Length: 237
Image (cartoon, rainbow, N blue to C red; front, side, top):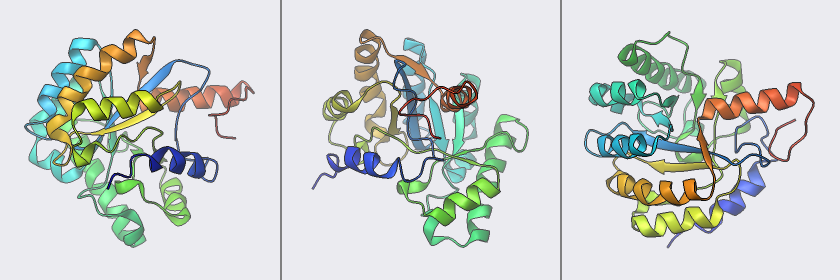
């Protein structure tokens, strides 16, 4: 049974309830953030990187600390290609099931793996996407207390169940709009199809006039909008 049709409804319901999360960007601008979870993967990520480079697209990757530890060369290649980096926990445990101490540890371990591997300042990776998209208000309070930025999504084509690249692309095209945050997977679940999916998807979205930005750029747009006193439906108060 596919839950893909439910994700747009879930996004619409949760976004106004949790405005401090980044769910999407500015609906007045033809920008899209293409994001990938659960990597880096030694087999699936390199061909994905080649595809992104071929089309000149910069994406955002939310990494598992354990995967960075296993594939440091791939992780460095992603960073050196200019993609934005975020945290997805060390081993994909659901955040609401963790104690505050365990949550802090899984984030700190992942941050340490990334910053050491990519030779970055120790606190430079602050964006966090919860595994399975699961969080509670208490989770968000802790993330804010620890100065992390929670990142969610607006387009979830359920690629991890492997319906095929063509089906995933079809689902994305049905849902995408200005400011969309698309989530795909380059890890063990879904990663086998990710390069083909992106190879089909990118020329279609580029032909529609969309411009690809990073998660950090969406945060910066939101901050600028608030400072300028502008009001958009996709800018949190």
